[in-house]
Image (cartoon, rainbow, N blue to C red):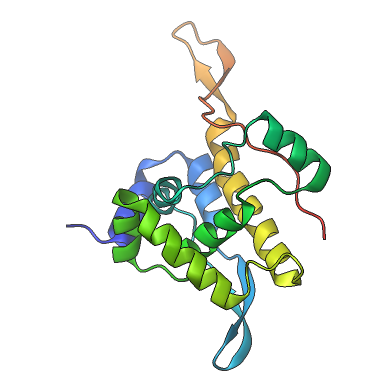
Length: 181
């Protein structure tokens, strides 16, 4: 059985350059968290395909917000389930082991509960805390980087030599914008 690093390497090698750049861009994000040694900038792991699948199985809502939710997002920069999503994405990119990611791909809800407990202990679920807003903004940036790479138009060359722009399949409608504090 392949471990998560081997799966992620295979994913990277099989993707077009634009998608690879999105995963590379989703790497290097940091979030300041309290550790036993005080507050430290914690480096997030890339939002890989395996983390994306796990997030969906765990109940990620962002990208699947209905019209009412989009209207609320436009007014408040929040949507129902945002704390759930912050917990899921931050746990997957900061805390989850490869075994947990693989298990979350198959059995999401118990790992969603684990992510919520972890995020609560880290102070990521308090809307009154600046850390929540940093994590929320970071989550949106990470997911949009990857989703945008999948929905960009690509040139297709036909046998006659002409080129046209054809969009790739976009499977979600993502609220755009970033939260404000």
